[in-house]
Image (cartoon, rainbow, N blue to C red; front, top):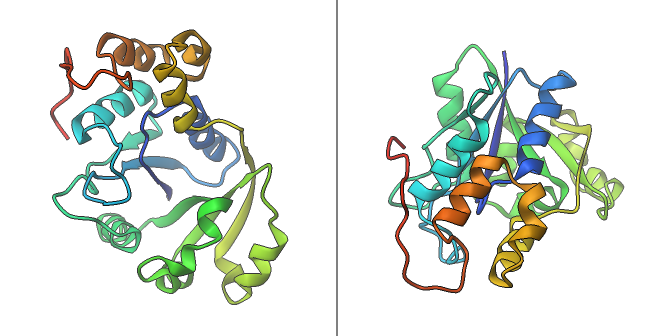
Length: 209
């Protein structure tokens, strides 16, 4: 089996995340996709909702999708590096092929990540092309690893979690409803997520992460 590892903040998760995963499966790049939300123990990620909240939104987004699943591996009390995550799944699924799903924005500096060369050497990377990014310079940059870099036919739409958060802060929730799964949108709305308020309580959260 070919398993795709899809990491990210998912703050919040939106339809493009889900569509990328389903398109990768549909076109045969992988047989299954595992979403791996980033933990909160990173100094440069100081605007994340809690682990439990983002895990809950992902759970709501992928429920009833038999080929999509979710992992709590990076939701630890310390920063977890990508190479550790990939090694974790390789140990967990030793008979399967592990693929790292990566946008061209991240690919551009993956060599600067902790053990980035190790990732490039030991794992297949499924590249999702952003419409504004040039691919050829990246392929030249990673010429020694081209056998592990698979440029997919899947393109990333112009949509980001940052945009969704900003629209909510502007009280323009109606603008972002179409970008979110219905249950995720309802969860954000009921819990007043990403609003300017500093104090709020979540009505429910899935604690099983």
